[in-house]
Image 1 (tube, rainbow, N blue to C red):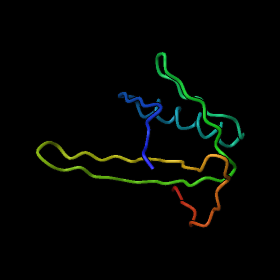
Image 2: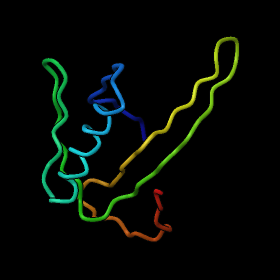
Image 3: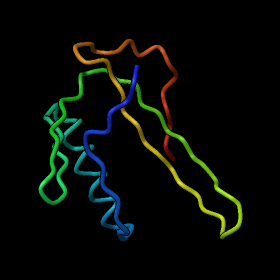
Image 4: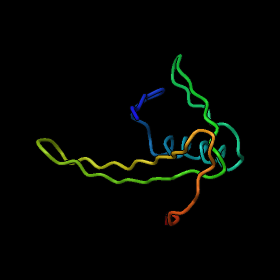
Length: 93
């Protein structure tokens, strides 16, 4: 199935600002409220079901320039489904 990007943004932020953004998403998820993402004139509102797949990926890029690391958090679900929760839970320490 082809992928379509419906919203994307990227900016350099302080750790505190990144934490505030993640916290705002976490608060909406915990409350069962829609998560609205906005940047400039673009916005998208998402309703995450009670159960969804949560993926965490850490990458290291090496090559001609300086080494770069990244962490990606992805929440994925089938539209109209509530997930099955069969994978082991992530622990963040």
